Amino acid sequence: MNRKKQFELTEEIKNKIIAAAYKDASCLDRISVWRLISKSEEAKFLFESYRATAIAVSKLSEEECPSSVIKTIEDKTEKAVSNNFINDLYSIIFARPAISLAMVLVIVSVITFGVIRNKTVEYEFTQEEVIEADKQAQQALAIVGNIFKQTKTTLENDVLGDKVAKPLNKGFGILNNIFEGEQNEIN
Image (cartoon, rainbow, N blue to C red; front, side):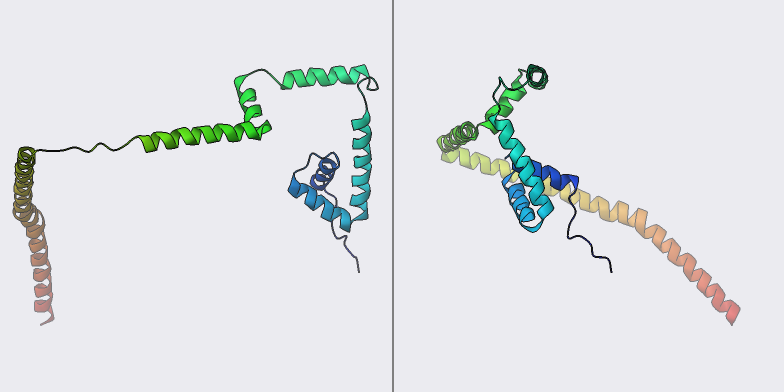
């Protein structure tokens, strides 16, 4: 009987272990790596070796590092980081959460103050204006009522009578003649 390993160290898991060793992993990844380390000797050995490397690299001073490596790093970072508005905005929002929080609070307070300060305007109408508006509303409703009456008459007489009822009656007449003809043939 072949026994399978409990798990296999995939590239994704190895990348999480490396990130945790260099303290670049998220909290959830760190927790998953710690659980993995507690269960697997291979994962524990890998983590400890990368952790030792990370500590050794962090202790290196600029003088101990070869100048070709420093030059390569400077060239790559200058290409990657360009001075533009998007990078500045990104760095303000995500690199400095306190500034981001302050900006959100300022924006929310300005919007809230604007909504609270903007009071609804109350109109006062005279009795004559109310009577005139009532007359206009009655006239508008009367016009709409007349239109509905005309539409009802047109619908009942023209559309239903001519377009629906006549062809329907004609069809029933044809069916009736067919059935009467079959009755005569049977008898």
